[in-house]
Amino acid sequence: MSINKLTLAGLTALFLSSAATAQYHKYDDWNENYTVQALLGAVKYDDLKFTTSDGTENVEIDMSTIPQLGGAWGTIPQGDKFQYGLEASFLLGFKFDKINYAYFGENGAFLSISTSMWMIDFAGGGYANFWLTDSMRIYGAGGPLMIFSNYRSERDYEDDTPNTTSTESVFGIGVYARTGIEFRVHQRGYLGLGARWNWANADFSEVGGNTKLSGIAAFVTYTAGL
Image (tube, rainbow, N blue to C red; front, side):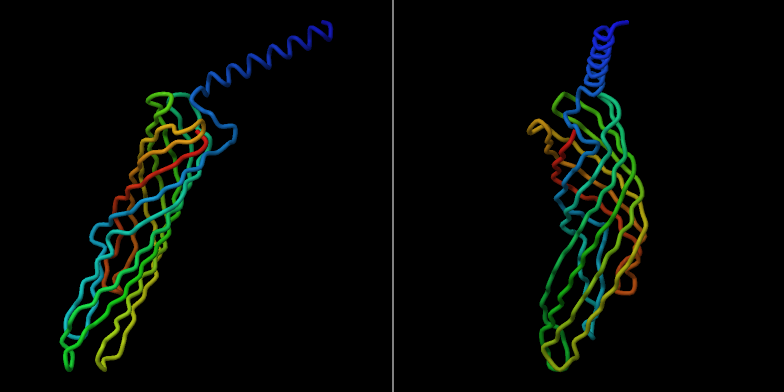
C-alpha cells in the first residue's frame, strides 16, 4: 500500500473517530476533563438551637438558618443523554446574631448576647445527569461528608455580673444528597436551582445544643463545563 493510501486511510479513521466521539457526547460542549459548579444559598437545620443562662433563667438562641456558599468539582460526564460521574464539593456557612433583653439581676438591667457560628463541610460521591432537552438538565448526587463547626456565645451584662463566654468546636461524619435543574445561558455555562439534604453526628451538647445536624439547603447554581 502506498504512502498516499496510508495517509488517506489514517485521515479517514481519524475523521470517523472524531465524528463518533462527537456523536457520543452530543450534549457536551467542554474540552476539559472536569466540570465546576458554584453554589450560593442557605441551609435550614432541624432545631439547631442553643440554650444559655443569664444567671436567673434560660435563654434560647436559634441558629437554624445559616447562609452558605461553596463549589463542586466533577469528572467529565460519561454517557450521552444519561450521564454519570464522580464529584467533590465544599460548603462554607456562617451566621452572626445579637439579642438584647431585660433580665432580673441584682438591680435589674439589660443583657446582650452575641453569638457566632460557622461551619465547613467537605463531601463527595457519585452523580447522575439527565438531559431533558439540549439546553436543560436535571441531576442528582450523593455520598459521605465531613463537617467542622464552631459555635461561640458571649454574654455581656450591664450590671456588676461578670461577663461570660461559651464556645465549642465539633467534628462530625455524615451523608448528603442533592438534586437540581439547570438551563443553558451560554455555550458552556448553565444557571439553575438546587436543593441539598445533609445529616451529620455533630455534638453541640456542651453549649446547650443538639447532638446531630440535619437539614435542607436551597441554592442558586452556576455550572461551567457540561
